[in-house]
Length: 309
Image 1 (spheres, rainbow, N blue to C red):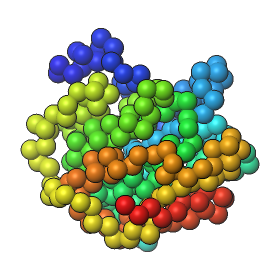
Image 2: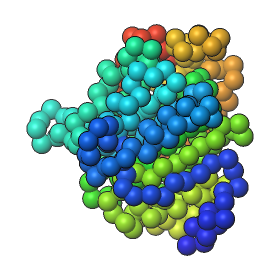
Image 3: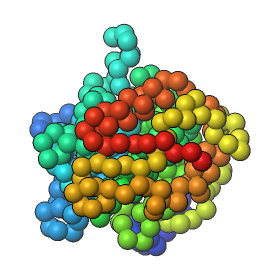
Image 4: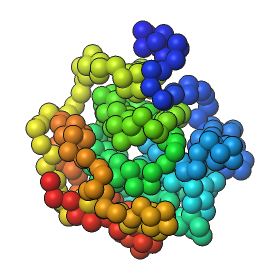
């Protein structure tokens, strides 16, 4: 495809897409889950070791929890790991591989408050739930943490049509998530996107193309939307508005004199409009999961307050 040819000549922004197989975010000791080397964790540690970055934010949107990344960064205050994944339901049939990544796991020791898991208790999550997770948690946390490098563990198995994920992200949502990170990062924070899981080649190809288009600052290609199941709407209808973030005052922010409210330096309006333009009512299960993740952070001093738009 043309986008691949353009990417092969170098991206026009301070971002890179690492096309490699196998995906490796499960690995933390022995091989596991098709993984042999944990590329994302190694990249984060290498950036810190070589002084190329003082803080790294790792965003993992693969539908499986990246237990290897979490284990390797769990006590490191200089790596913030944020994972959105499927977890456990109430029955044995609702168990989801690898069976890790619980909401209460927020880091330990010096790394307390730098690990967050948003856990979907079932399949079926779509653009709506991911838009909520981004606007309520991901984007304000990135902005407040102020990393020198953002690494995305770019799993594509939450996409509609994937053989394992059983969720419903459309290709353009991958474009929007990538674009929103680029907007928050601005010109000063480089972004590396590392390919992870995805078990339907046609679906993965569409989603990869949209991520690459966003990195190239190219317009969204709506040809990939022929089968989009979402009904466009002008506004996001929230099940519970009380969990939206206004400011974050975590230990790691106060330590660096950065504990001021997000409202002072985060212009959320444009991102909110973009992320919510085609979404429906957020499911109760997703709201409960995000509320629990927010409360887990609050217990270790990261307070996310209401935002009234």
